[in-house]
Image (cartoon, rainbow, N blue to C red; front, side, top):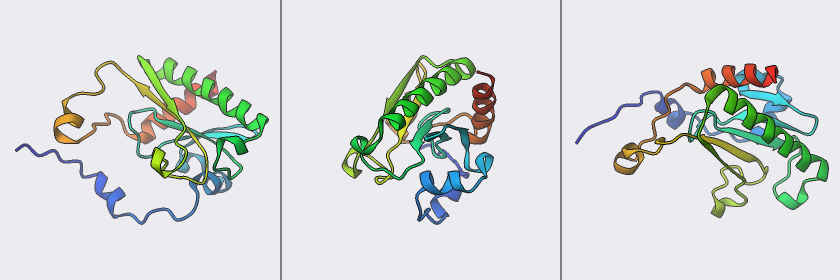
Length: 160
């Protein structure tokens, strides 16, 4: 049996899990670079997923603590979709993906890790990004540090 070592993952495994709501708390802290907030709109913001499925995995959330899609205002929905368009343009320009997965998980049964604050995931995809690693070894390889992707995408968004 081959072994694959990813020693950086132990920090996540051992670290205490965040008790608050990252989508409420992080924007109020005024530490955007440390919290991986790429862009702030009036009603919502773009934040990197610190534990991505793929490089460039972003989330867009309203500032307001809302758990259900139908609780969003028309203005929040409009801005979330406008920020999604901005994020997709930035990812295309800087990372050249072959496609995207975009979605909102509502409820734990649907896969929501943070149930009480709705957020839209944007996951860039490349041909061949699913290979033998997740299938045979139950391991996903992320080839770029989240902080590096953050810098690239923030610069790109600011240039659009």
